[in-house]
Image (tube, rainbow, N blue to C red; front, side, top):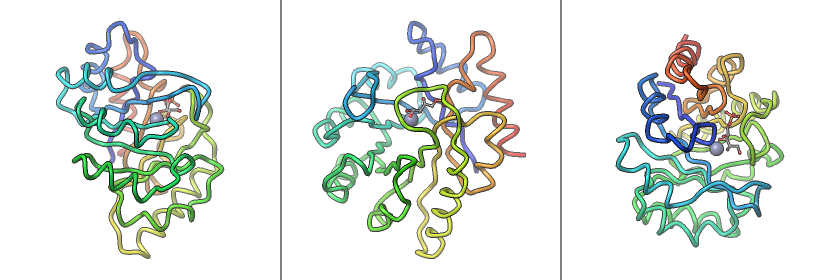
Length: 218
Ligand code: DX5
Ligand code: ZN
C-alpha cells in the first residue's frame, strides 16, 4: 500500500496544526519532518522541539529525516519528543550499524538515507537492520527542487537487492515527487512517498493530497 508522507517543510509554520490536519484529511498517513543543521546541508530548519509540538496534534507517525552531522547525539532527544521513525544519512555516519542500533534501542524505527551521488551498494551491510530506506531524489537541503530521473533506476536496483536478500524493508523516496513524477516512482518500487511543495498550497492542501494519492494508487 503506497502512503503519502507529507513534508511539513513546505507548510505554513504559523498554522502548523491546521496544515497537518488538512494534509491528513486529504489522505496523508505519515508526517515527514526535515531536520537540517546548516552543516551537512546548506539550510537550517528545526529539531526535537518541533517534534514535541507536533506530537499532541496528530496520531500519525512522525518520520524524522535527519540531515545533520553527528545524529547519534540527538537520538535520545528525538525519542523523548515523540518521534516514531528516524532516518540517518549514510554519508554522515562513521558507524552506521551502531547509529541504526541506537535508534532501535530507543524504540523508534530505523531508516537509512542515501544522497543521489551515493551508490546503492554502500548500504548493503545494514539493510537487514533497517525498517526503511530513503532514496533521495534531489540533493538534500531544500524543498521545491526538480526530481532527478536517475532515482528511478536506483529505486529499482534497491527493490531487486531487497528481493535477492529476502528482506522486507520499505522504500521511501524524497525530493521533487509530485503529480507528474509519482507514478514512475511507485512503478519502480517506492511505497512511502515524501511530498512537500506538491501538497501544501493555501486553500488547496487537502485536494492536492487526494489528487496525489489518486495518481499514486492508479
Ligand atoms: C529535502 C527534503 C525534502 C523536501 C521535499 O532536503 O528532505 O523532504 O522537503 O520537498 P519537495 O516535495 O518540495 O521536493
Ligand atoms: Zn526529507
